[in-house]
Image (cartoon, rainbow over the protein chains, first blue to last red):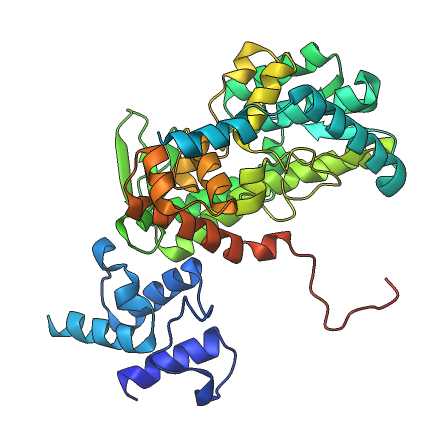
Length: 82
Length: 330
């Protein structure tokens, strides 16, 4: 399963309660679409740290890294590559 | 401060007619008890803080001292000053007042145990004689709002670390027991006396969802939910409440280390937050707010955005249970 599929699967299952892939576009802003609130973002951070063994530093906890499937994929890729 | 915004705000919010406001609230309280709640008096838990003190005084103004039942509900993390101020207020108002230490009840349901277990995940050495609080972080720096745990060792050394989500939620869930047990006690006496329960949020707290659902958020009537906190302080003075109460600095009185509301929840101290909320409600530009508060415009924009975010994310705290279908008969 690709990173994108894993993230999508997590968001679809835990926040949208569906396996319908059309319910989420990978570029959708979680905050703007009301998919996640700030606690939801903290849950995503927990998921990323737990699942991908990535330590999200305080200064990385910004919407640019965490507000869509695409942004999370890019962020994890960057962290794992560094 | 910008003359325009500050002048309008002073005229509209600070210089309101306090006699008229007390009369309006008193009339409404009597009308609400008579026509909606059908209860004979009011129960109020007094924390020693400004909001509950003003609510108690307004209750007495509305009904007289014999129809108001006061409660002091301290627990092991309450400041002794809070109880002293509560006791002072009860004597000042001349109302019947009971003191019920809720610490044993909280211990019995595991409030402290669950909280301490979560704290120890972050600071394993935490134990007897340590103090704690949670502070909010990140929002002003453009980060996602998150929480930090601050502890003080018995020697007075302060330590701080980021609070992981699970532990944050567990600490908040455990400490929410405090507000919920208090409300259970308030309703016990309300049921016993056939009285209604007073909720004490000010406008800032009510609007921004700064309360515990089924805890301090639960009540039959909320007499000051339309008043900015600045106005509540003004009413306290106007009603002649003791100086110790009028000058009390607002804290949550929930954690063993003193925790300001602006450390945990709001992005500015209450005087500034009041103005920001009023300005946002009156569609004042961020540039004007920034000038009035002497902050930069990006900060003012963050505050407006944070107000909207909190309104959105705390809607569920205000909401009644959601039904699958409406019951047309009710």
